[in-house]
Each structure stands twice: as C-alpha cells, then as structure tokens.
Image 1 (cartoon, helix red, strand yellow):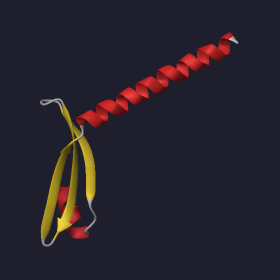
Image 2 (cartoon, rainbow, N blue to C red):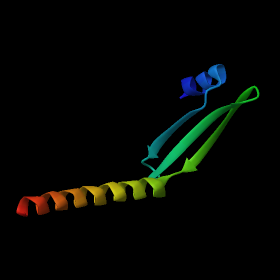
Image 3 (tube, one colour):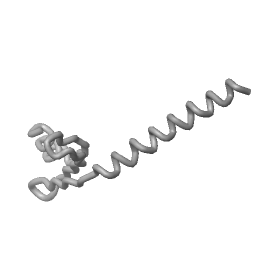
Image 4 (tube, rainbow, N blue to C red):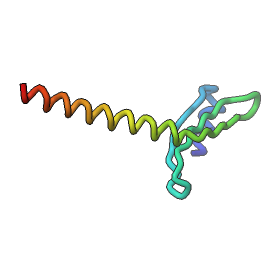
Length: 74
C-alpha cells in the first residue's frame, strides 16, 4: 500500500482501486491523487453499486440461459 502512495507522489499519476472489507461486509473504492507536496486519498462506499452490478450480471445470465433453452425447443 505504501508503494502506491509513493508512486502517486513520484509520478503524479492518480491511482484507484476497489477492495472488500470482510469485517464490515462493505466494498470501498479508494482514489489517491497528488496534491501540492502530498496526496489526497478519498474512500467511497460502493457496496450498493457492487450489489446492483452483481444482480444485473445474474439476471443477464438467467436470461441468456432461458433464451438458449428456448432456442433448443424450437
């Protein structure tokens, strides 16, 4: 983790990543950017976005399987 912060300071390129906190059961997006002589780190709770994306993917797969079965019957 320290290397990420060092790289942001040295290169000036922002860095973002998502991680899951098992203890709290939440997803977090971290955005780290260089600001003046240091960095700014912003944490955003994206748990609901992850849940919604998982639901969309699940529904898509169910629809795809349903259409595939329907084609086999025709």
